[in-house]
Image (cartoon, rainbow, N blue to C red; front, side, top):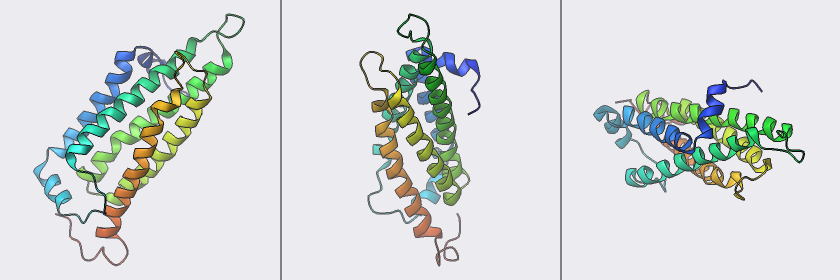
Length: 193
């Protein structure tokens, strides 16, 4: 797996940066497209699937998930310099941490792309492909984080598992929005607003 720039290894070493970066970027990504009256009108015109969460619920859940994944990246970064049994840096833990941080930053990029794809460009099918990729990356990240030695006696994967679960739910919602409005036999019925 190609390695990420060292700067992206250093940022999660600070817990405030680790939590703050996804919160700020996630909020900015959402604000760019959700503030648009045209985008809101388009979304409100969609036939959404059963079980769609309200905007208010989404506004509570996503910051919690961003903060948890950011803190998870902090725990991963602690393994970059973790001592092994002989007191030197544990090369296996360092290698796993680097792989996990690569996955973390890829997942953040895919997550930040979703709102502009779905709401900004009004492309539910492309956003769905992004979300499927994101779910796969977070699944791999959760497994990789689970294999890391625990720092502070906290299993690192616990900070990514809720995110993975909510991504599965989000994939259902995105698929339902696409299928109900643009799916087979429906594409000619819907005109984008």
